Image 1: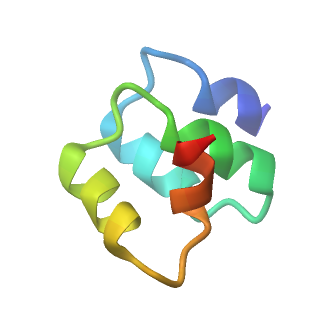
Image 2: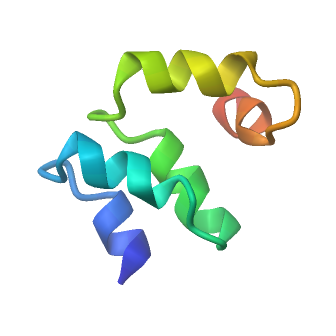
Length: 59
């Protein structure tokens, strides 16, 4: 269900950000690619050296 939500293009930006805290890697991986992820949040994730999101974005 959470993966489905993370890939829904109608999802609100607030919920997209909330899903970044999901304990499941595949939900976070789908969420970081969401088109409604706020740009400042994406920039913060890319600059954070302790996060695995950088690898997810690179593919």
